[in-house]
Length: 125
Length: 285
Image (cartoon, rainbow over all chains, first blue to last red; front, top):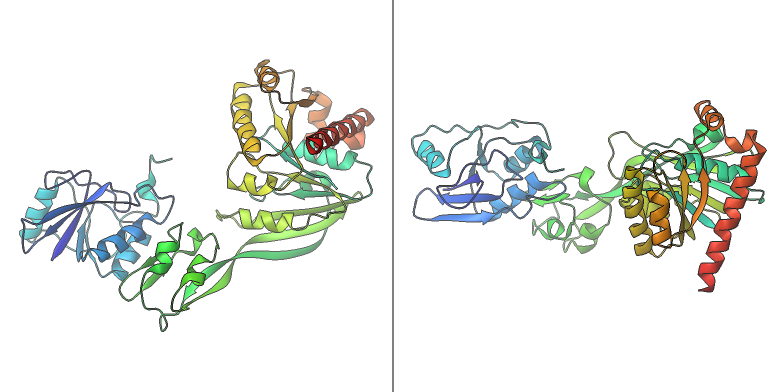
């Protein structure tokens, strides 16, 4: 199973970014094979609109089936549901810590948005 | 006849005051005032037109037929505004992001996309004091104003002098308002803020290749930096309006200087003469 973590930088040591559509990158871990860690730049992080659904589309195309993030807005939540990607919200710390929590069964999927639309744009304008 | 846009970088410099007074001062038979500040139209407060016609304006947004769609993702790929996201067995459409360009429907290999109109506002037309009047009213919360502005501009009568009251700034709605005009009058005030935004507006009209000039409102407040800028950049200052208690009082009552003060009727007529002179000069070049 491929788990994507919204991150501020590359690799397992990176800090989790609290935003989904506008996080700088996604660190994607293959949980069956923990050696396989890739970092994908979020090409739509600076989009004027629709960053959440585009990020969901990007992750779906990479075969991701779950995403760990700080907060998720309503458009992104709808898109992730359409993409059949499970959502773990309220995540803090590093990618590595998130992976450990996932393995320990401490992450629980949510189906609803945790913040209003455009929350990830704070400080962008 | 002449299509003349009244614009500004900075808001609140007096675009509407100038547009309305100029329109009412002209003695030509056909004069038209189009208020293209559709997010906050206010020329009607001074012109007080009788609205004769009102119609809705929309933009075409996509609707995807899931029976025909192969989820190839081409529509999302060609959309410049992220209005579509395609997943394995679903397409998500975000109509509020759609600019109505039609690329998705045109390029869909399965012809699975049809377009329907999403209303964004209304156009109202009418008459007042011999003026032909029209404005757009954008729906509250709507971000997509250029299609409504274009719908208002479509009413421009080639046989009339058309005065266009543009929105403030230098972004898409302003470009939509001033594009294709014969002249752009930039209204500013002699303050650092007015100067900064005038500088942006000057760059805009130069990029668009529009002949333009400046009107300095409340010319006796602030400093001389705007006039210096105009001199150094070879930009004509066509008129100056002082800060005047009587003018402010008329404005506050929703009345116009040209209807009450003959001297201002003459001044706005000479402003128009100055503009036609510059347009003819630009044509000769």
